[in-house]
Amino acid sequence: MLSGKYSQKGIVVVLAAVLTPLLMMCGGVGLDLGNTYLHKAQLQNIADAAVLAGGWSYSEKENQVDAKNTINYYVNQNRGITSSNPLECTTEFTSNNTNTIIRLTVQEDLPTFFLQYFGMKTIALQSRATANYAPATSSDPGAFDFGMIAGYNKKASSTTSYDDNQILNTNGIYFHTDGIKIDGMVHSNGGIYLHDNHYATITANGSLTTAYSNASDIWANYRDVNQWEKKPQDIQITTDTWRHYYTMGDQSSNDLSFTNTGNIDISLSETNTNTKSMWDYVQNIKKQYQTNPAQAQANHIYYDDTADKAYQFDTSHTNEYPSLTSGSITYAGDGGSWNVWNQNYKFIVVDGNLDINIPNGLTPGTNDYVVLVSLHGNIHLQNNSVFHGIIYAPNGTILMDGACDILGSIVGEHIEITTGGQKINVKQSSFNFNSGSSTTNTNKKAQVTLIE
Figure: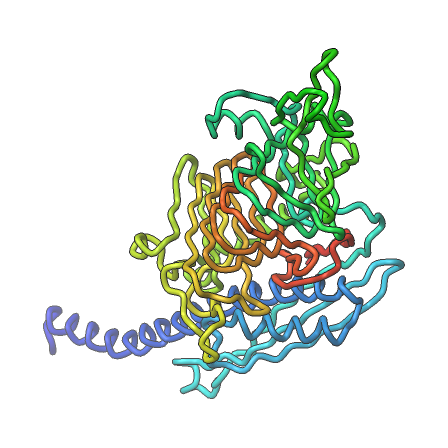
């Protein structure tokens, strides 16, 4: 008869023989379950982003075919870790009074690692997302239908000093250069300063609205002239002195007229109808980045709400910011287009100061657009190639000193433009930041929200 010692050894061997396969099985099942969880989360992010994009596409023409094509495009564009697996999309449209409900179902057959040996070769995954499209109920434009808005809301401040900071900090818009042309709506809650005789023009397609009615409250720079120098629009201030304001001009080089429409609130808030869509957009970007930072970066997203942190996206900081917006630009096959799809950030939301430098010689294609947001800091853009997108700094200064045109919208507390000859064109190529697409429908205030 075996002693107790050898009997216990025998039991251990038996237990090991029984438990080892079970432990291996548990590990294999755990591997498949973990992979399933990752793919399910990715699939839900894909569905959420695609149905929102489809909703905003639908808002442009209320065309279901265009919306479906947009949804399919964004599903494939944002596949990430699902890139090797077929995805099946089903999109349904239903009307609810004046609104349209868009339901998207994305399905994936996920191959298994361990369970395939037990006959389960794939796991069927399914994610649903639903968007509600509410058509426009007002023709009033939102903040990002403007080519330019300065939120600083004090009357024009004149100064004999040429201190740029003093001029900028006491006015809404500072044109520190000549030859600026704006094709779109411009609004300033505060003063507008044109340096010396520098000139900025709004074309026939555009307009200027302000928060004041008097020229002295709008135009910050002027010179006093005598009766032989005065022009019809100059204002008499003494018996033999007239005040000539440096104003923006219209397409015929006449002094630009303006309309008092009151303040436009550019603060980022869920309750601010002017920026509600941007609020939703930023929350979506934040959610994606916090859920899966690696996947968000693969989707060209950079998000960081660390307070008082500065960011420099240029070729000298490529080690700090992988997939840099301007440090790793690649060229498409035609030798001239700006290919941002695979290597570069397109959607940047930060809390502090943001510096962006885009190299010269690049031409953006139809889908080459960028959204730059600084929640509490300044934005400095050196665009030596055409910039297509939105620049938004509701609590800071936007400094533009690039040599090329802006297609989109500039909205900030203060705005300064320093390079002559720039064109800012919101009508030609305005940006719908919710879907990440271009649209010429600049006055429509539709609402697209994720409801499931």
